[in-house]
Image (tube, rainbow, N blue to C red):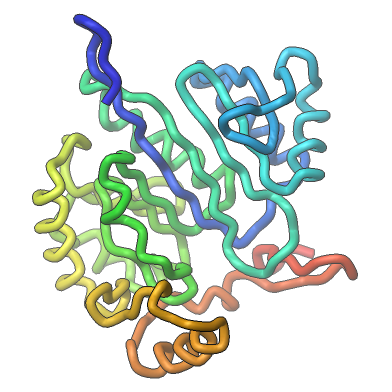
Length: 273
């Protein structure tokens, strides 16, 4: 929390977006235009979220996009928000984009939902969730979405790979608040984003039981990475766990094809060349 005198306390709401598709110059510029349209004015750009080095008003938007691509990982920072973009076509694995915004208890929850859906589209993400930073430890499973999901936070947005995996009717009938919007289905645990951690845990377990536990990270089953003595042990463990944990995830290869430009590997939606 941040509070001064009679000012309404604020919290940082964090969204995480997983995308197999790297953003190009036009798409990064479109994202910047979106931020401006919802009155989130960028001030600085740079690799560091604490000390971004480029002043927004001294650069053209196209130059900002070129800088993002050149640096690969870039921060866009404003007065009350931070965007961290992973944009370089380096690895054939999901990029994780982070967006943080200060919110108070006066905020309209549906604004947070719509912002999440808009950013999913702009970052070409297939999965996203939002949570408050004070609940960070509960939401970090240490596994890629190629293996499983962590569970459910207050706000969860699913793209086509997940809609096909579970079946649209099953998601729409989940024991929670469900919203269908523009190719995504959103599951909210409550109309109130300011939930207590115990409330989140209880609803989380109810939804895991409904969808099936094999789709979600099995915290009690996994060993902590800190218990390994070598990289080789980790590699052997990863091979073993894939055969024994029974994790289920979408077949992302059915939605994306990995291409090479002789410098790096990257993914594009199937049907695009």
